[in-house]
Image (tube, rainbow over all chains, first blue to last red; front, side, top):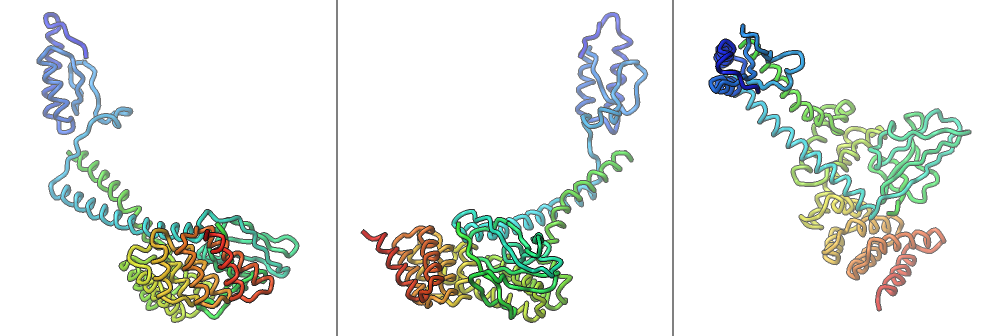
Length: 209
Length: 206
């Protein structure tokens, strides 16, 4: 802010006053900014205002949405009461929905994480799974630790011996292999098996914490 | 003014996208992934089971996992629904036996123990014996012992006594591991459980 010479710069002062009044009337210039500019002008100071139309004074003006200052220039969001009411309703409803969803998902994830931690009493172990299947083209490991998803854990083939090494949370787990995307086979090396609810045997392993 | 209105619309559209995005993303959960793989009626029943579990404060992840297992094994939709319903019943029984303060992990472990053959009263007794600590690990060990052939009452008695003696989770795991080794070495499950239990309790008692 630069102080004007009140005796030798009357034209400039008039220009500033005109700009400030114009800014005050402008629909896009924040009234607080225009009001401050007008007050500064009345005090004899040169202030930078942001009218919607550049004034004729020759003083530097800021375009409210100029090339580089649009992000920092204050802006008044104008909308009809109906629009604002609709926006407020939308925000309230979506916030409620998001909050409910996040709470639900958080509780669910917490339950799963808690179950894993409790199963273990610790973090789990790195487990190596192997299956001899020379004729297979693809072997997947599925179990309660990966959502029984055949795409989640694929074994690597080396001379017919399929292998994968993965971390498994501590606890008692049921699992098996899927060959070529369709054939279910329990782990022949598993020390324990259990009846599933679907007429098949699941292999059982206990991972210590 | 027209510019202001135009911009206000952009603001509103952006805010709506920001708010609705996560909600829409959350909709595409594991349960919804099953929609395309089950017939409409079965999916509605499964959804009702999950909603019921959620409303009762029971963990829903095991139900979804059970359905995923059934789909993987190409079980029929009625079989998947029946298995999920049975699991929900066990989850409820587990929570009733362990009390309203039971954690999701304890409820799930209790359901597994019930599935293995433990009784609801044995779950309650275990909770009473270990009221100040979690019972998830003892319940998992109990389920494992029964699944290995240890008589239900023998397994429950051993686990309850260890809980009453403030045995640690590590001690429970040691019991399970020792019994597993003894059974692998040829000992009967009942004898192995009795021997390991006496040994562990003898070390704990002064």
